[in-house]
Length: 138
Image (cartoon, rainbow, N blue to C red; front, side, top):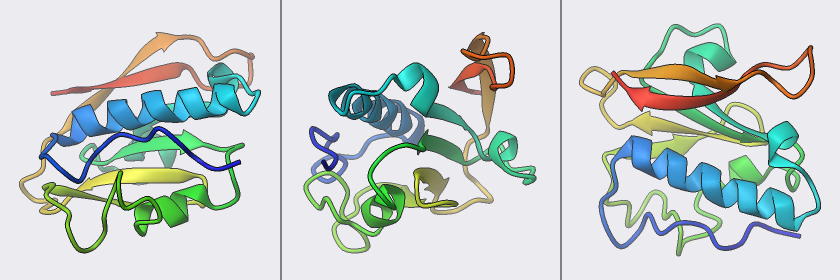
């Protein structure tokens, strides 16, 4: 089962934070359609909270139990009606992945990219899990 009903990042310019949130919502819907619970299987966070990086300019959307290497495929343009790379990208951001099950929304020019802050929405669903987060602009 693949990813469906993904946002349109091709026909109009969308700011990076809005795009990441739209994508997280679509990933949550795909997760539910696949019989899983997004509370456990998906997340949105800052790159600095995902790795040992210090960057607060990159947003990560994760769907760990999704189709094999979905993040690699999507960030390379496997769904050209949703995200076209490298041709046809009207955005001032692009996608890459850290693992095969995430996408990282990265500014084209990191030096002038906006900074973001992660906020906790609620504790993780299990004592050994990270809090469920959201990302806001600083």
